[in-house]
Every structure is written in structure tokens, then in C-alpha cells.
Image 1 (cartoon, one colour):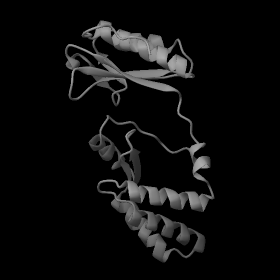
Image 2 (tube, one colour):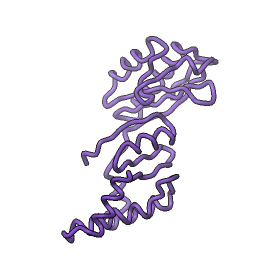
Image 3 (cartoon, rainbow, N blue to C red):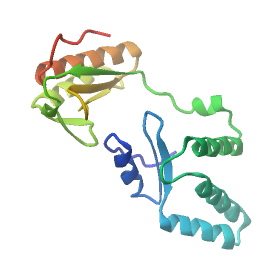
Image 4 (cartoon, one colour):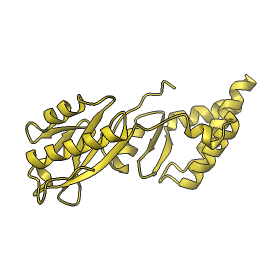
Length: 201
């Protein structure tokens, strides 16, 4: 689709601010919360084109976008209005839900957590995708991910408890599980793991 994708730290407040940087910003969290934001300039232009555009095809396209603006809840996000917009798009594109679902396939992944004595020993950057502390942790994660195809992994401290969340993905579920376990062990050994060492999945 050639749509630019940007990453932000975890949490709606971070995603919402990032989406506000664009004329049309779309954000969704893994837990399902999200919405579509239209800048004032984009909204004004769309509404103008929906009324004043001479070319019928362009005017109809602008009207569809105007209807989307009116349906989407830009303030807080609303699963019902989001669902209705998706239903309308699927109808316009003549796609079933199964066809829509088949457009994208997640890589196999695993999310785990590691108990640590103090979560504050982990610091991250690059939208929580790179660890800058403790020393050596990111280098170890980089080394581990190179051992698997289509792999990536990152860690981030919990905001509320002394645990570190680990995410790993790879070309197969078995490899994603192995990578996640190895990253958990790295966190345990380099970031002050607490209790028993992590067991394999």
C-alpha cells in the first residue's frame, strides 16, 4: 500500500500524539484501542472538495472521506464506529471479512515476561524497540535475532511492576518461542533477574 508507518512508545497517549502529526493519522494498539484522526486542514479540504469539486468522481471520493470523518470518533476512538467504517470499506471494495483477514499475516510470535529486582535498570529508545541499558543487553538481543530467519525481538520494562516484557517473532512458532526464551535468559542474567531463571516455552 506504500503507506508510511511510524512507531511510538506503548500507550494511547503516545500513539495519539504521533497520529496528530499527519493530515490523516491512524493508530491502533494490540489490545484493539485506536482511531483515525484528521487534521483541521485535511478536514477543511475534504469538506470543500465534497461540495465544490467539479469532477464527479473526485467529488464522490471526497464525499466518502467526509462521511468517514463524520462516522469516526476522533476524540476517544469507538469500536462501534470503527467497525461500521470497516464494514463500509469492505462493501465498497467487495471484500469478505475472510479476504480482508488474508491480506496480512502476523509472523509467529511470543510475548513473555521476566521478574527482575528493579525494572528501572532497563532503559529503551526508538519507541521502546532498543535497549540502551543495562550495557550489553541490546548487543545480546541483536546477536540472538541474527540466529533466526525473519526475526526481531525487544524488551521493555513494565510501567507498574518489577517485570520486563519480552516480545519475539520469527519465521516459525518454534523459532519465535526459542528466541523469546533466549532473550528472557539474557534479561535475567544482565538486568538483575529475580527468582528462578525463565523456563523454555
